[in-house]
Image (cartoon, rainbow, N blue to C red; front, side, top):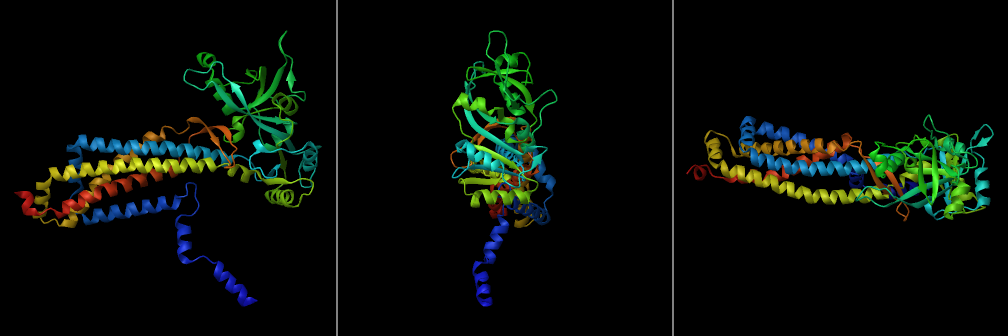
Amino acid sequence: MFHLHLAAEELTKPSPMVEFLTWLLGSSRWGIGRMTLITLDFGVVVTLVLFLISKVPLSYNLNNLRVRWKNTGLTALAFTLVLSVLTLMLAFVEGMTKLTESSGHPENVIVLSAGTTDEGFSNLSNGDVGDIANQPGVMHEGDMRLASQETYMVVNQPLANSPPGRPKRRFLQLRGIDDPKIAGLVHQVELDKQGEWFSQAGVREGKAGEQSYIECVVGEGLARQMAADDTQLMASGKTSLKTGDTFELNERTWLIVGIMQSSGSLFDSEVWAKRSLVSNMFGKKTYTTVVLRTDSADAAKTLAKYLKDDYTKARLNASIETDYYSALQATNKQFLYAIWFVTVILAVGGVFGVMNTMFAAISARRKDIGVLRLMGFKRRHVVASFMLESIVLGMIGGVFGCLVGSLCDGWTANSSVSSGGGGGKTIVLKLVVDLNIWLIGIAMSFVMAFIGGLLPALNAMRLKTLDVLR
């Protein structure tokens, strides 16, 4: 048995090559983190080697870039455009990634109906919801069990005063909550200082002759977006809805009684209201979600496994809340693939731009190359000199491109995240430019400059001294 066990281990053990590739391409935010660092390391080493090989003073190359400032500027501009677009697109994906990663808590268990991976398609019966909420391991806060029973839906909201050229409707994420205080404790969401949770009735008396107002709380990101989508509010200088403001939905007036301090999570784009009201209003009578709070991450894993595998009263899909929101990154991957496809196309243009500039520089300096050879500089010195010139040119454009792209840091944008199963959520996110994106940009600049300068430098090496001096 011992020998069989060892044999099985040997069969399942990955080969050294597989282990190396796993390490090289190992999981990171972009799936290329190690490749980026390896490219940067390679770039630093190559640049140092070229600097040591080249006996030609670097001032000679810098002076040429200055003299041929028009060609230098156009090539640097091409690099700037490529890298600024790359930075902007990666900042968008990074914002989506941070949003989904920061949503949820490892102590929470999210329960959906079996076969669903998105709460928008989940349906839980009222009887099952009560039993799920009473499972052992669910925490208490005083006499309250920390089990939030919810109905999630996406509804259509017409926008009567939207700015010209902007959409005339929005898909609004609406979450019906049985008890907002419990939901706030479970999701660890707090309100602004002036806010309060909606009442048990969920409505408030309106003005004379008008229908009652539906009380709700909204995420601060959505509150800003609602103001931006209303020309009258924008004209008055209002940048965000506040507690006490109203909006129209389904021919009813909704009163904001609190703003959720939910920046950095998916709740930032949601409206919460009384479940019994919104369920009847929009025809979704069943629960979609139960979120259970446990006292530790280990307890949450145990409870999720029990509800998914061993619970017999109903078939359920239970998972750790952080795992659930991480699974919504399928859209991120699609964006990332598209980004690299576009970037490669743009990079090809940048490479040809460098080649054109360097070929033109070499053509104009044929006699200079001949003089350098007569002065005792060898072919490798000439190659190294022109390669350094190309890298300097690429780095100038690349750094400026990253600087321009970094201006988008902190911008807000609308997007959607999907679990890959057909569901999704419309969200408000912040674009993020971090060190990782800068490193990717610098690495990309080096690769473009290296490839673009290689052929012209080799061409310069093949020039014969006497021929170029005639």
